[in-house]
Image 1 (cartoon, rainbow, N blue to C red):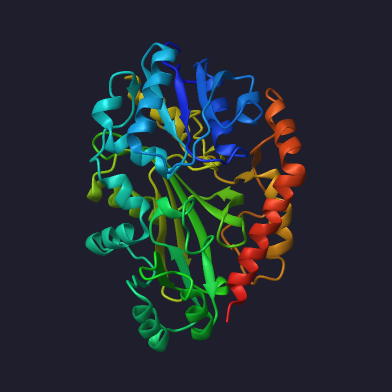
Image 2 (image 1 turned 135 degrees about the horizontal axis):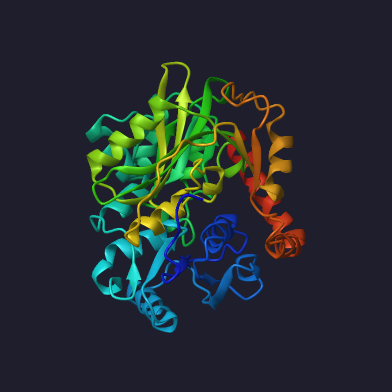
Length: 412
């Protein structure tokens, strides 16, 4: 490998909320741990896949919901920083963590290293309404979207909208406390929309978005690390073959595919908004008008980030650590044709996609290599721990997600 990481600077995986089966956190622990970087993680308990990794020096057991008072969360992070005892790179894995770090930079700057960003920007990017506004300001295509403030607004929308439509929670931070919908929900008819809206209260926390037909769309992803000058130091593009829940959830199967047009769009947008740090973007290519439409801008590491690594050995988490410790981020080409598979969700996703009408013509016919989310020969315990926790509760959770998605797809 043409670089060495600073082994005197640890990394800390920061996550809030109860989602123990998170392969992205395991991937980050392995990615930096294999370079000799001491790794720490916040975990729900001592029996999570992340806590069982051979590359983890210590798990800080701290069950949270993500809805706690920010001051409480900041004090908890500072307490962990004192226990580690030396400057540590923060690696957030969810929006709550990314926003907390951005909005409390001065308080956290002593024991921790992280990209300095305009404090309100990550919260705006994580908000569906905030992101849509930024897209409009900077000429980035996004689906047509409405932001109803009352039931009457929804009724007026239902009279003139073309169905089906998609409903999403307006703010990222209500999805665990009081979500209006359990996830991206496809609504087939005006009657179905009005029936759902009766349960959303006086101030519905949703956005209503145009539906991009599966038969006319292709899902793409962009991951990057952006330096203090808002210049991507590592940028990757890929196509999503399957997700779970189907068409609306986390990546289950994807390929690295070179896409200069998409890379340029992402690089221009982060420059325009002045973002710094790791990003995970979801875009949908609409074949009807030939445009890539930005669906999500996650201002943090994406769970599938290990799909992407350059031929110089750099992924976005390694680029983050290298840059924050004052080391050069080597340039390199992405590994076109490489595949990423999330073992516990790809099989149900495969079954669900068989009759969906969704196709990915840009995906290669054969993979040049495969990265598994959970299993690794040099670190097998996270895979076994995942299996132990997945059977039963995990399978029931998958079934519930499938049922929710199915009800949403047929509402009306």
